[in-house]
Length: 128
Image 1 (cartoon, rainbow, N blue to C red):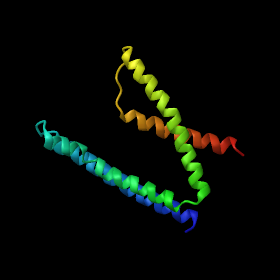
Image 2: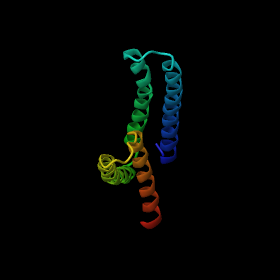
Image 3: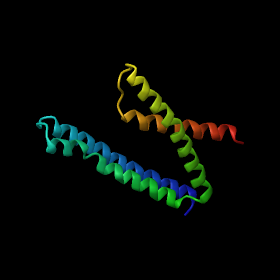
Image 4: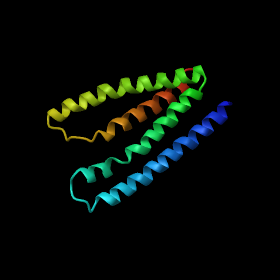
């Protein structure tokens, strides 16, 4: 399979998973609002995780379709992003102990995604 076809299939699979995620997320918030606290409400509120596993599946399939060089570069970027995110999140955790406001765990993936993107851009611009 050609690189263009691989990337096109990946985008379609990931976009489909993310659209399902948004639909389930909106639906779960709408359904959970009038519900009383308890197990049922908790299950409704965590239901958007199910389509996220479709996104993980799409990503795993994409890695399986990549050639070895692309896979190596992608995993290198992921490793560097994790290496940036870990000390940042630990540092902020210590700052929370010093009275800084608590932030949501949702920020961790955002920081990792931004780190991964910036590293990829940096590598493309300066590695030639």
